[in-house]
Length: 322
Image (cartoon, rainbow, N blue to C red):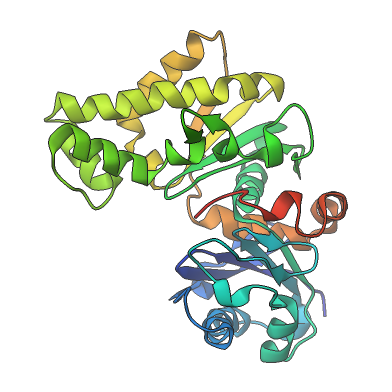
């Protein structure tokens, strides 16, 4: 029987999402989607039980012989080549440190599925690329704006990490910025801090802040500063990578109405012309991108990149804080 489906799996800091993807059409089958909350402080056995519960739901719709394998979009630090957790000095999944996820999945699922991994920001970029490929875009920069600043650079379906045309590891968040790194200034925690400094009030998230922007010039200014600075941060790299299209995702992107004009102006004053779009796929981009790992045309260059960057070095340290 033809192996026509892949299981796309998105591992978040506190959740797992899974779905079957029909490989030829790159279509996600909605009815097969599952999402489970995950206690990222739990023991490895409990985490794997939760993960496999979601995966089994997606697998239950077709015979195992129809499954090409499992693709996992995994946050770092992680050994993507070997499938082993490197979670240390982060506030999540400490009990997966030195834990072989591949072995555990095989044991629990009781099937010798091919299992492949990639960083979650790269999976998001791959998913967006697959969706936009028919429009002829070849060089794409994708950014996720949320609890962390995630990014990926995709050239003809291949992530670019080890090249002078992109930041180290393809990660904007690791760039030096003010007194630390950009990840501290272009994420939800920056908005919460700025909102408190400006208003003396606390907020639970960026949506709550954006809801107040229409009636408060002080709040609007927070977003305008964010947009201007984001343009200044990414502008140089959009040029060096010859970016054709910039995709924005993550929860903060939902407030584009308030920071988009400032971002666009910031790029214009740098004489940068690039197509900017908000993600249409949103959370499903990582599911589609991780499923694409089971397509050999996408996987082979990624596998070579994993081997080159290898074992707990380039792709496994802070490529995307979540």
